[in-house]
Image 1 (tube, rainbow, N blue to C red):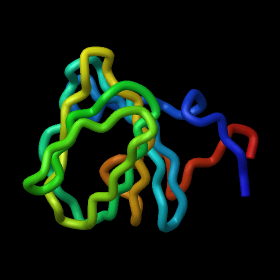
Image 2 (image 1 turned 135 degrees about the horizontal axis):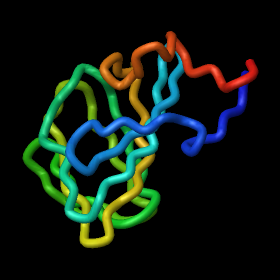
Image 3 (image 1 turned 90 degrees about the horizontal axis):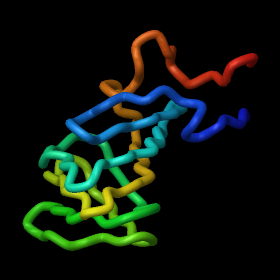
Amino acid sequence: MFLLNFPEGLPEQEVAPGVVFRVAWGERLMAAHCTIEPRGTMPLHSHPHEEMEYILEGEFRFTLGSETVTLRKGDAYLALANIEHGGTSGDQGAVILAVFSPPREEYKLKGAGERYTPPGH
């Protein structure tokens, strides 16, 4: 077990215009702190990973398959593998905690190794 300064202790990566992730992962799980600028969009996409997201701040107009809803602080959703999903933040932007299983290789930063290791460990 280790503790980390999440999300401040993790490097930023822009995964779409105006969408910034900070990620940490283990062997079978990845957590991403997502900051989305006002009216920022995570394009519709699908992947073979399960994904659960929890809205920490703001609003997110979210599409999952053929349904679209507005999620607000405290709301969560589960996107099963290979289901198209995406959305757009509201006027104030959004902060979201996303959890993926298994970890998404494309979000692991080059040189970071298999798992995030905090400095000094």
